[in-house]
Amino acid sequence: MTEETNQFTRRSFITRTTLASAGAALAMGTDPESQVRADTPRPEDSLPTGKIGDMKVSRLILGGNLLEHFTHSRDLKYVYQLAKHYNTEQKVIETLKLAESQGINTMSGSINKTSMKVLRKYREKHNGKIQWIICPYAPIEDGLAKFNTEVEKLMDWGCDAVYIWGVRGDQLVKAGRVDLIGKAVEAVKAHGVPCGVAGHLLEVVVECEKQKVPADFYIKTLHHHDYPSAKLNYDSMWCNKPNELIEFMQGVQKPWIAFKVMAAGAIPPEKAFPFVFNGGADFTLAGMFDFEIAHNVKVAKEAVAKAQRKRPWRA
Image (cartoon, rainbow, N blue to C red; front, side, top):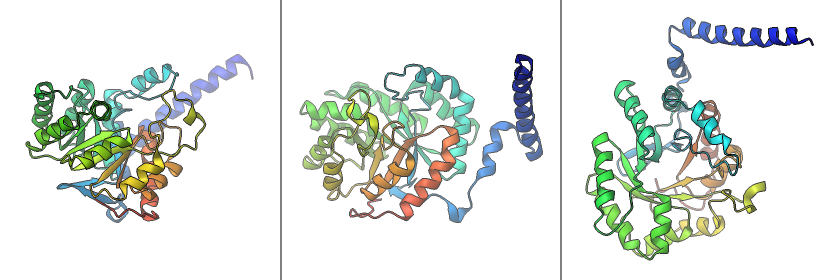
């Protein structure tokens, strides 16, 4: 193939692709941003849901990490920039619309300033209905001054539920300050919304249960270790005791959202979702690009329908 032919082929491909996308949008009578609504599932085919407090929550929850450009890509630093350039504000709004059209009614993320701006814009200007489960990043210290300030912001913005950041949960348990976790949970619940506790360490759930922290739910990592980079110990493993966790959670009566279920993309959803639902999780939290959502919803529905669990559904 000559260089001239090669260039013509590339130009032709780009032109045909662009025209096809525009033509499809015109045929539907929509702009490209609203095309995602064409994939709205039939009501009888929607994602199954569970309850957290009074919230009706889809079994598959949209994770906020990719929307915030945080990828856990080991030492591939360029992936952070790739995610940032792909998930523009418009693309994040498209992704939220697509998630809702596929039956995902809840997302979870952090109080990151940029992402919260987009979430608020989606709700206020695009009539978005997706629920927010958000964690403050503020330190949890005696008096809770900084933590309470961030929680009040979330309440002003219409946050539906709050949870204690997993890194913070780990730190406080290691420091022997589970009492502060309990006080933070109570401070959130005083606003009339559910509050959960997150952690990467099994000990977070163990200690919170032992000391009767009044959490409404847990967000705890769960994934198996059958993937190549599991043993690298370099931003590659987030649940180091999956079997012990599954066993312990059988006696926990609070709803459980499993996160890092795909080990940051190392485990395909076809393996990850059945593992967590069979293992007793009530919900799975998954970071997804827009082009992954429809497939992941399909896999999640099948995993829930075929789940073989020892732990009863707690939500």
